[in-house]
Picture (cartoon, rainbow, N blue to C red):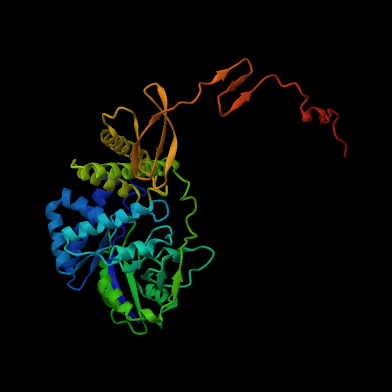
Length: 445
């Protein structure tokens, strides 16, 4: 079996530390790994999440220039086509599409190519729509390790083809050792070999080694261990390489791999749908505001108006950041959520103000805009009176004055032409009054 070793420094954008500390962690990690690349001419390092690359580009342009040069030479591999490594259960489908759009666009503009692999080693389960979205975003490969953490039912595969609900397929590899922080010792290869059920059908495996979660990546000890694993009697041969080359070789064995259909459910982390409910509520409210503003702004643009692209891009990037898999699921420290919620509110208010601008008009009667894909009808109060409306999906319609009768009030009724409510004193004896009363005499054994 052939083992491809890639240096990895998994960096949670927030977890046991706030976002501002991650800016510093990213700088230190890239600096450290550039030193390793200079010290070992064979070493290959990989880094995902365009968000941390973007922070480096804006805050440390000289360091970013060195990172781009290393990427151009093939020594430092950009990985993953999503803006961050987001939760894959709570964001809307549109948000997942935007994760791919903003991630792929950034790497294309700054590194010169699109990513073919979705890189989500630490995310808490994957919805069954994902293969379709990845395939349409140009990502034919998928990497995770997380399902090896299942606590009750062992996930049966490490290399397989994942088929979504529409029939779309992606090629999946889960590094068999079950970690993205491998120590790169001989015991790592023992685990990799014994925990790889497809090793005969597809004799290719990845070894992701280095210190992670808080970034950092491999140290010099890791590099020396990998060098010694290159030719260790009785073990698979280990060599540096990129994940892109690895998936190209794995694809030659695709026909021999099992097919998994439907959701990839993680049994490990519980409560991720409920914990930190305020964060989840803000995420959904901002998603709704973005949807409504983009609909209204597109209509205005088609009529010759301006499109608020800069404001929308800034709002989307912040929302996508907060969908990181230790923020939106609620698994970060309290400080992370305490700092996220005011920013959510700022984004929400700014989007609401832009929506109000696009809705402003000089119509003689109030108008209703329906941003939903279903027809709506009802009543709305404006200008100190009630109006009726009926509007088609994604359309705008004028309201008409409501001609209904005013409410009629008597001493014990409230009514109009549709409904009458009557109230008064309760005269009948409630059934529970006949129940036997609790005895004050102590019960005897």
